[in-house]
Image (cartoon, rainbow, N blue to C red):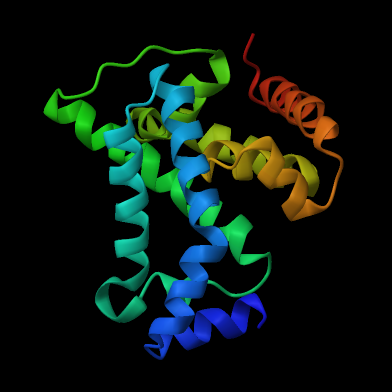
Length: 188
């Protein structure tokens, strides 16, 4: 059964299809949750990973499978659900941080960048507009790489699979895209 057929069967309410979907991508969801939590927090508690995994699967079947219906088959379901899991994990971190139940430390600059999306909203309108205008002036591939990594929270591996490029090419290409964006914005 193809990914899209499996998703359609899940949307129709097939319990066996749902079991197969969880079997196919359960470990990927777990790994993506753990990876995102470790990357941002410095470590990941089993309870937090399980909360994210449970939240992702509940979110997929909640409200008549509303989120599951968003899968369009442009990538493998595994790649798509990893992206969903990364975004859910980042939202989980934000929520738990606000409650004061999580402490975090940045492992690297890229991890900090993943959470800077909220800061974009607080930028003055002219700076935010300048940033987004500069992004639109980038070549399509650079724009795509930056959006997938920073806005969608995809891992290098997921990006490599999605746009069909060697894994070891992703990091340098994102670095060059960031540098191009800095030059266009005029940042040091």
